[in-house]
Length: 494
Image (tube, rainbow, N blue to C red; front, side, top):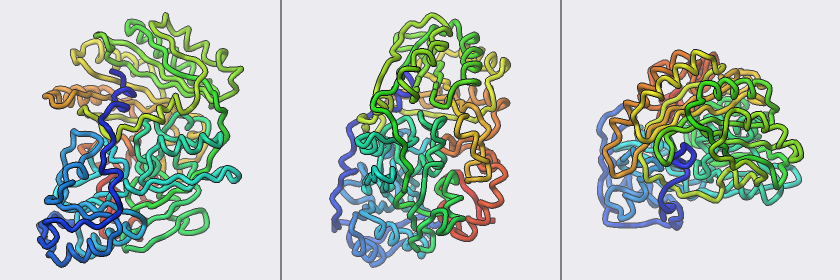
């Protein structure tokens, strides 16, 4: 199985994502609820507290005794089996404001859920409160201004498809049922990033609710400090309710697909790949996966997207075809939606996974040898070690222009172990990934916020935010002094 295939597999979208916006008064309506405080202390919310919160919502308040509790708490990765005490499924910004105010007033341990794709499981929390914005899905495109206003529960595929109706696109991730919120707030790497910059570089404005319960707008002229921090600072500063994105013209047919090579030529192929990407045009995005093959053994797969003139495509990708003798060549003209898999939004994965990664400035001979040596000795049946190409427009933005610091990285290097559920592959795959990380870590310089596990070391904030940490800490202290929004690559307000 390939990394992108794994990310595109899953079950049918949860019915929970289309719950009607109504109040449900179930058997738990008059019950008190035990819940954790922000400091880890055990608290109890009275029946009247619960009733007051529920009565003010247009969306749903779900507790452990609600009939839809198990479906509502389910995250994209079934690896994380969280059991929150309360879930507020928000119908709009008003519900977000009420939920945040409630969390602050009662000092509750709180997580925020958009698409539920967090690889560290921080889209939810055991015995705490989850503010779930996934019902808030809307894309409103202005084709004249080339802008899109997008509600925070929207999935990437929905944004892609609506923008494409007008011949437009913006940088989004590579897994269609990822939520726009988490992707954007962490930076946003995608197939168009080398051409148009990160997703966060294409945000013109945010609307959000901060920890004090106030609704705010953040853009270049209103709350510019928040605008700066939200572009790459993760979910540290509030619950975003909508984004405004800059869109770009994109031809209805571009070029791309996958081309696969035997693993035996891995060292030479990676050297050639590094040389090609060093001088590649911004329009060319190529990711490499050294992975388990479907029929057993190992293989190397290149995932290609070229968004430049179609007439130039064959010439631009020709060096990739010379990296070896392909076992499969599926490169050709295609729509951006096809390359993105935008129509495939299962909403859930049916496989467990463990992922670690780091940003690297270049693919050196020593890195190539370390990675290939590790893979040559692996006995794991399902694995992937992937290089995501960066550079281009990403690199031309100053590290201090937004909260996203690691502009100089040329590749994002990921190690992924995955297993079918139900199954007992968790321990074996986790150990394999940790072993791969020991090999990769000496070559890495920083982390991508959206690929950070909760067991990362304490220096993870600096590895993600670099010298921007000092400014981010000051902004965090101003807008979230009690660190309500801590289920993330956390910036502590001290």
